[in-house]
Amino acid sequence: MIRSVLVANRGEIARRVFRTCRELGIATVAVHSDADAGAPHVREADTAVRLPGDAPADTYLRGDLLVRAARAAGADAVHPGYGFLSENAGFAAAVADAGLAWIGPPPAAIEAMASKTRAKELMAEAGVPLLAPVDPGQVTAAELPLLVKAAAGGGGRGMRVVTELDALEGELKAAAAEAAAAFGDGEVFVEPYVVGGRHVEVQILADGHGTVWTLGTRDCSLQRRHQKVIEEAPAPGLPEELRTTLHEAAERAARAIGYRGAGTVEFLVDRTGRAYFLEMNTRLQVEHPVTEAVYRLDLVALQLSIADGRPLDAAPPQPHGHAVEARLYAEDPAAGWQPQTGTLHRLALPDGVRLDSGVTDGDTIGVHYDPMLAKVIAWAPSRDEAVRKLAGALERAALHGPVTNRDLLVRSLRHPEFTDPGALDTGFYDRHLTELTTHDADGAPVFALAAALADSHGRSRFGGFRNVPSGPQTKTYAGAGTEHTIRYRLGRDGLRAEDFPGVRLLTLGPDEVVLEVDGLRRRFTVSRYGDRVHVDAPPAPGATTPASHAFTALPRFPDPTARTEPGSLLAPMPGTVVRIAEGLTEGDQVTAGQPLLWLEAMKMEHKITAPAAGTLTTLPVTPGQQVELGTLLAVVTD
Image 1 (tube, rainbow, N blue to C red):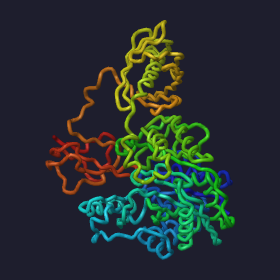
Image 2: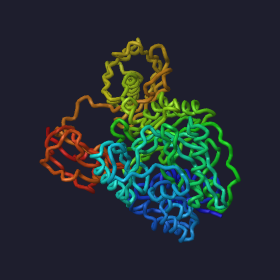
Image 3: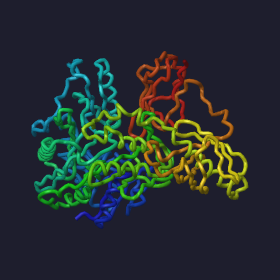
Image 4: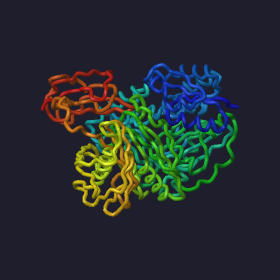
């Protein structure tokens, strides 16, 4: 029997596996890079082993170090989590060769699905429906649009949509370069791009005794950059005939490669209801909690049981209700999904939802890893109830620190196209991103007023507390896409605030302000972290604006040194310069929107483009160079 498990991973999935291990009385071993030395998964494990270095290539992607760590810590099994080496057949074989139990499918099954091109050949032989590949040398305009995909890996890396024939060659090269950097394999292939398709997948579980479970379906159509954002189970609105087809195809796929353990078979469903095999993930999926909620199972516990050689029951339990999961990222969707860094001061959600997180209050969100902070999962008897529950919990969450995609998630869950299952498809954010990320400052001023009042009630310049400021007060905050200048006076006749004629002050404290706004009593909680102020409030009835706002307190007099040369392009985040546009040098003429260079941060590439037509007068960076937030990357002179 397995008695001690090393998780060859980090963050949320490591904590998730440890949680089940503790419930089963199994000892836990963590591994960590230097950047993760104080991470929650390290603190929670019974034993931890250091992997020297920061970058994944030097740490979590070093199979030899991971096997050595497992043996040094006395572990008798290895769970790979997801990402990193979870679908690496060589690592699985090395674990087994070291006499350790591998909590995953056999290396041969991983190898069979490792290359998407080889996987499609095997699935065709097994009778699984799939899209016919396209020869990039023979493609015609009639076959557009096309999808260029990396043969190895996943997560949207090495993937490009091509809508013009002239762009195909360049996108093939770019996808191959990204795939080689991410997976060490630059092979790419081309297939038709299905416009308006849904991403539907089937969770499977197979033991070593011939039993294969198909645990319903999941819909993962809401994606950004081909990476999932919101997932749910079961996939809504599927005809029963199509559901049966997907289950049977997934089971055939598992049996064709002698699968064992947890895995997912992914399909693309077009507008006519036809399903096509995309790929098989030979590991536990990020979105596995929605299946757990609907089937009332612990998939990690079942993985451990299968690895111990025990059989599954003849049939899985029956599903109940509906579950929806949202991935909470430290990123700014309105700025090209740019990852955000900094201190996460607080992450708290109301009771009634499941929170799977790799971070806790006070942790630093760095540049080395994926920017996902947490997964929030809601279950209810019906889809409508589960969606409403999840949106409400996210809306009421306290999220203090870097910018997140929280408001995008809430607005997505309440969008008419999402609430109508028949309208779901992978183009949701292509159509609606602008409206979902437009800053709505209508409700922000009263939050800024609450911040100003609480700040005035706080410490005076002599270090003591005062109840009310008697003189006129002026405070300026930046937030919600604009500046808010608050002018007010507190006297014996109460609050007099410019531009707030319908607001009365009811109670005032340094951390809480209660106002009457147009006859409604509203309570605002104010939290300060340096010059950053977070103000949270219960959502107003029928409100469409956010119930939380973050502001930066601005000084009375601007800093004259905080200026840059016109046309300067500054690094929007810490990262690595991956490459510079081919042949680009200082003195070249560039056009507005022309790609100049690419930054890599948090497992994603970010294109830096010319802000206007002009001359590239400065290009001080080189490929491979590490840059900090605000580093000068280039100057384009208009």
